[in-house]
Image 1 (spheres, rainbow, N blue to C red):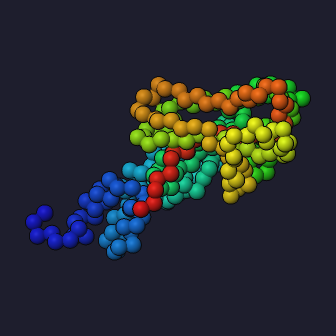
Image 2 (cartoon, rainbow, N blue to C red):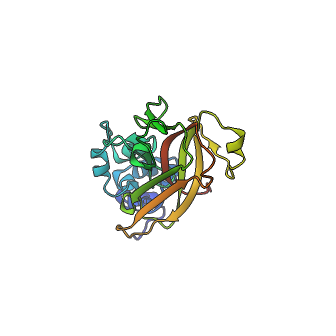
Image 3 (cartoon, helix red, strand yellow):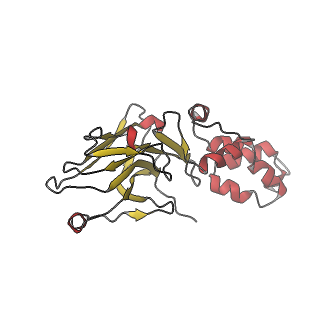
Length: 240
């Protein structure tokens, strides 16, 4: 290493290894510094380190084939998701800033009380949905929805992950509104979302995450809810 006065004098493989120890955001920013940085920052060494472990298996589970020319291209494809999985009940994408896995469990992947009783719930297509069918609540006093997911499907992380319910409302009565303590957030895609909690995902692959939404006002009938599913996303990282 004697005589090297600038990092760009290092072999490209060494520069790529250094950049692979940073973050997707930092690697992308470094690409504009010089042609040497751009070549190193766009390498498969760098973007392969940002892809989740077992990404080949994820590709094999996608409903539609994914065509890509490099690992950076694949990373950006994943970030531009979500992508429906072959079981038609889950969708997958990556958080662009961190490369952490994100999932949505569709309604068919959840356990919904009385979901097969058409006077309570009806399954129907929704053009703007990521999954083939969503659940429309006709009327129910004892609303109860549960979901489960193996922790090994998520990225091992030291950050907190957030759980969001995705839904639409056909109508909301004044009686229902008085019980709403949390205000849903309107997304750009037209769906509402409500943060239900957070958790820490360590490296214990045998853990199973359980989530539940329940109506505690069982004497108050609920209706007009269209449930798409529940999202699991990493906590956003602050932009420097």
